[in-house]
Amino acid sequence: MKTVQKDFSSHKDLVTFALQNLCVSVKNNGADVGAIKGGREEALKALKDIKPKDYVSTRNFIDGAVTWLSPYIRHGILTLEDVRQEALTHVDTPEKIEKFIQELAWREFWQRLYVQQPDYIWNNIEDYKTGLSHDDYADELQEDIRKGETPVACLNHFIGNLINDGYVHNHARMYLASYVVHFRRVKWQAGAQWFLTHLLDGDPASNNLSWQWVASTFSNKPYIFNLDNVRKYATDDIDTSSENNEVLDYSYDELNERLFPKKGQINA
Image: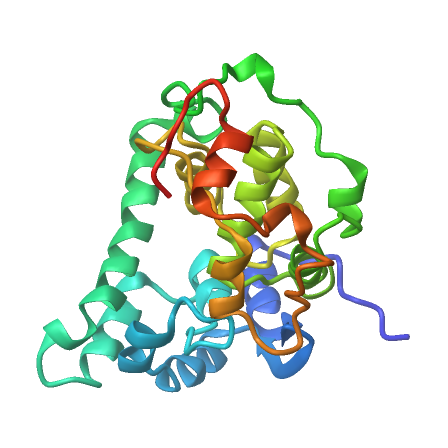
């Protein structure tokens, strides 16, 4: 077995080694899509492969044209400006990839907010909009969630992506966050820490503030989803059968009544 170098003469040498030797295998729902290799050169190769116009129309689909650049951005190998400038070369007018540019802007917004309000990252920015108080939510994530052994088959698939691949499609991240907070009534902080433990692109600002958005402590309502929504965006290898996903197999009106009995109707 090859021994990984552990001693370096300077911090610069350590950074150089990490950028040149980082290599992690990433899969998309079990299908190997190749390795994300560290270093600026590899990042630029990946950057050239983005399809921003396809991203706009398919980004919510689990097999949509996502860029796979988030680990490079997270670790400072690519900047948001690098990505924006490359994306603009693929179109004749910026309006054609407006949603792509907006997502980059959201990421920068999270970062700027983190710098200005560091306490927001691990504390509720606002109260829950669910009819429940902070103390109504459990402090710890249940073990069946951590292991991907929940009663919900489609979510177990996404948890497997998280644990085994260190990457989960953004739409699936929203599903998991919603399930943890609203279906299982666990504090978003526990879920956010769980994600950061596994994600290759785990970033406290983007991750935690997104969890707060789902939880409704940084938005005007909680984010929820049902089985029909998963079916719309899932790939064929994900089990979306009613019998294996019963807890999700309701209309939004029914889910609102089940999840937020003290609040009443919350629009999905």
